[in-house]
Image 1 (spheres, rainbow, N blue to C red):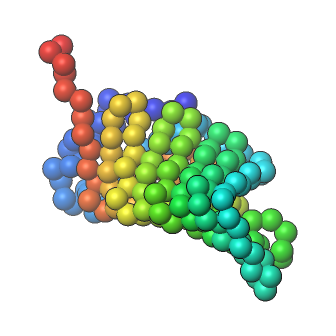
Image 2 (image 1 turned 45 degrees about the vertical axis):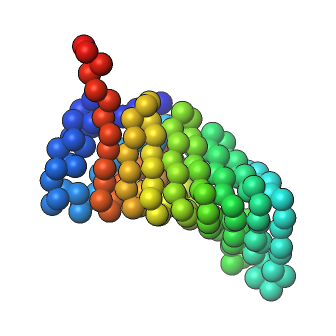
Image 3 (image 1 turned 45 degrees about the horizontal axis):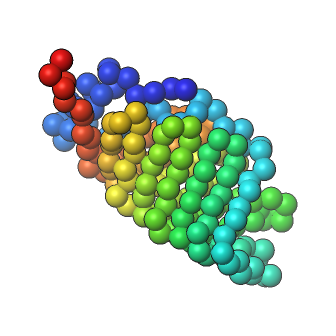
Length: 165
């Protein structure tokens, strides 16, 4: 698993104090090295409403979506089917979104997961936790195929103290 290294943390410390770099975004790793986006997507929820016209489904109440090592939970998720009608194109999660991959976790107000590209875009008070370190931003884009993530929009971090060492 890729992890946030000291070099990245040192760079983020400088980033917090440099507005020009902050506007460009910050790259980090997220979760397992690779998630196979061809794996099935398992979805559970309290309720589901299906739109017969476009094949979309609105899931509400304790929604949990699992694909390989990745777990996505939210209050509500809209499942959008591919135009061809075979398979899922994207998932639009809203409210108390939590994305977990391996030991890494990210929280946000909303997230959109495009299945084919393996991209998750999280927006609204994003909080990423990795090995006791935290990063915050307004938006985080994760490529779950590569494990790469980019944070943008007032990126902030909290680094642990030396603990007397």
